Length: 122
Length: 306
Image 1 (cartoon, rainbow over the protein chains, first blue to last red):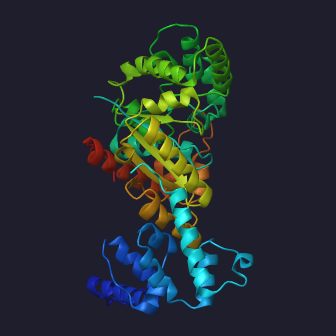
Image 2: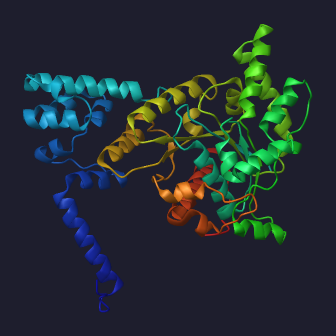
Image 3: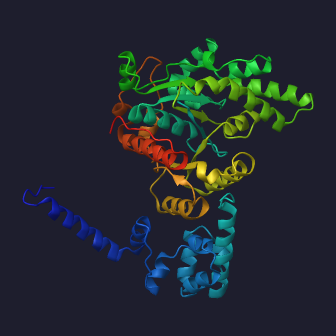
């Protein structure tokens, strides 16, 4: 890669932040991680919220209604993907389940995992 | 000077306890100029091997050095100090060796090494103790009293004492834990290690340190940058151990493996040569541990290198 001798330090930084901004716009998971790392809290739109929703974090937050609000918006295929990607179900477990049964399974298993793995010494 | 005593411990095996011990010893000695003693309480003797080499571990044992010899003193009912059982030279870094040679005592590492013989002594001791109606708890208490007494003279000689603990809760391991001011808990970002860490955290919190969260420094080691590992790391920090102090995430790296393989007892390497691609991780480990102690115990150390 050729070095651009004509750029100032600020211009280099502008380029870097432009790239970062573009990535954050198209990658909600990264956006959520960056905001969390900075200690902030951002409310994502419903569609994005579904994409970045983490069943463990939501189950650990203790709000069952919020959990159901987020995941009930999902289509069956999205729910199945979340269950499988988070190691909360196998294809065999998912067969023949209705959307509401999938959300129940997601909540029960995520909550159970959280209680099994969370240190009781706080 | 009163030494800070840190137990590097987790019930889960293979999470990098010995590697963390050596990285922390090197990092604190190199960047902060601290005088460090590594006490190996694990009969696998891995941190001893990393510091002294396999030959060095055997030579130390032949010279009467090591935790197994100290334990034998306890078994024989002889009161003693730990000093004669310590190998004073466990430094593997050229910069620290040169500083010592020039009498600039900026960073030095000693070892009270282990040896596989330790477990055999422990078994003999346990059989004798239990045959006299003793219990694991009374043995653990007696060992803590004995080792605490034999280590007391070390407080004024060292800045930091690191206990490399075994992945079980034998009376000796429990005694080591009970002598610690803080607990460094390495773990891996996967399901089995997370569960093992939770079990250990709960046990230590219940039986050793009710204020564990304040005294707990968690380190995720052997990290592979996959979506799954990142997710488990997030859950560790935000759910399972959310009130703990986290160190830097140490990558799974061939540099780490190489750094732990010392060529010979009289072989030295520069810090850069030893740690290669993970030298920044070792620096961050020392810095984060220093920050942790500063916030949680009020102990402050000045860096001597960047």
